[in-house]
Image (cartoon, rainbow, N blue to C red; front, side, top):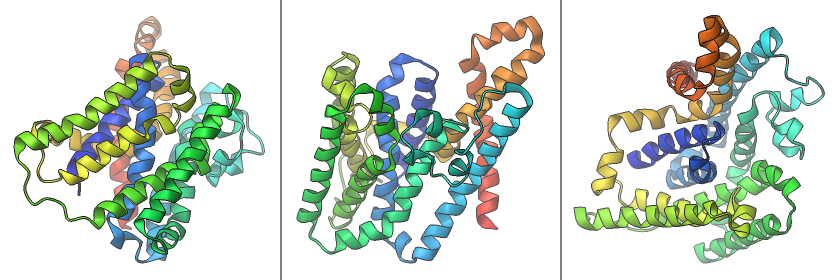
Length: 336
């Protein structure tokens, strides 16, 4: 268990929630966070090589986890919509959402319909399905050749993002084939580190300096993106964040158990707890916000109008509580 990566999961999850609440100061961390989650998923499954030894167990464990949460949230979203909101457009795309196939359809009204953030699960499910094939593919070649293949895939995705007009950018952001590159990059980082002998001791000073480097690079990329640079805007969906996120993931893995001052601050219990429910935080955010806006705040009459204007402040504690409860439920389901 790499504790500091778990803390980063929680940090990025909250940043993504802030980004979705139109807090523009979190735009960069929002985009970087999505890349981080895909890359980390690939990294961990490769770094912990034993988890793929049995394909049947690998698929069952992950599909049970993902579909259980997805179906719960999707059903709740539809019930809430039918009872109060009446915003959804029900049609032929509902079965695609049930089966987590919606991200293959290049239409925002399809892949962002119903449980809006489940596009992430749709793309992640594709990555999980092809994981055994990726292992076989990478095992047939040296790390040098594997890196050449992945770098070529990264260059292709970057080129597509640069030459594609703005109309298609949202689909590039959710497309499973594009997100597979993030996931594959993470897998290759895990495989590379797994074959390296990591240092048995690192001084506190050196560890702290090493922790600062990826944060500085991440901040620099964020500043470039925030400046309105046209190239950065074209690449913001994924490609722009590969380098800083890769550096962050690798450095956290290398310094696992030898954290510097920053690492010591990040592995405190509240952040580790937050990381433990980050999956639920991401998937539940729209449902909880809808519950607050359409079902809870109207109960308070005129005061409800007032707190509606501060929905983030009111929604976040409710989101954390709900995510914690659903996380407990998912653990019960996984153990049965």
